[in-house]
Structures are given as structure tokens and as C-alpha cells.
Image (cartoon, rainbow, N blue to C red; front, side, top):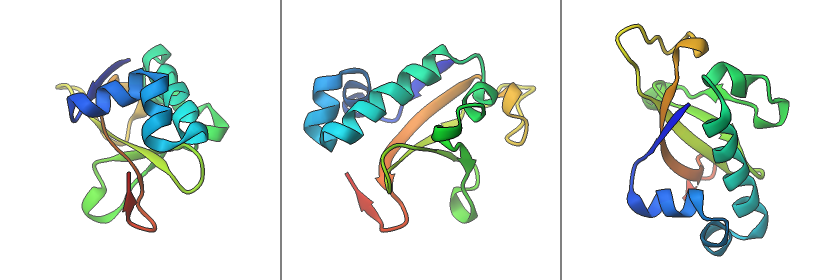
Length: 112
């Protein structure tokens, strides 16, 4: 799967374990780099759905075009599918490009 990033800073945090741990703390940093590695190894979002601990789920309301993946409770990795001409938000197998939007606790509204 191809992974893009909303910002260069976010890309560095997601791809560099030391930077991830410095920004988010040890546990979240380790899990963040693990999840990004899983995304890179996947052929589509369908592969991520088969990882039970990732708990891939589609968001609702104004964020209905995004998905979230569990990190360390309550933090999530929020991704936005980049759809091709045959892409469908409801068809995980057709989603093979995503953009990482943020690492957040969207329940408590605490961004990091």
C-alpha cells in the first residue's frame, strides 16, 4: 500500500521510531511506527481489517471520509483513503493509497 502524509513533520514522526517516541511517548511511538509498517506492508486496507488489535473503523459525521486505527488507548491513527477511479470508501479492497492525517484522541479532543 502507498502511504502519504499530511505534513513532512508527521511523516518524520511516523517513519522514525525515535522521533515518534519523543513526540508521543514510548508506548504510542512504538505502536505508531508498527502501524505505519503494517500499512506499508499491506496491499489494501482489507489487510489491515484482518489485524484484530488495529480495530480499523470508519469515522462518522464530518469525518465520514476517514478511517481510524487503534494505537494505545485512547489514541488513534487517522487516515484518509486516496481513491482512484475505481475506488470506493466502502470497499476496503479497492483502497490501496492512504494519507495519514493525524495521531489523536478524537474522543477527548486532545491532539498531539
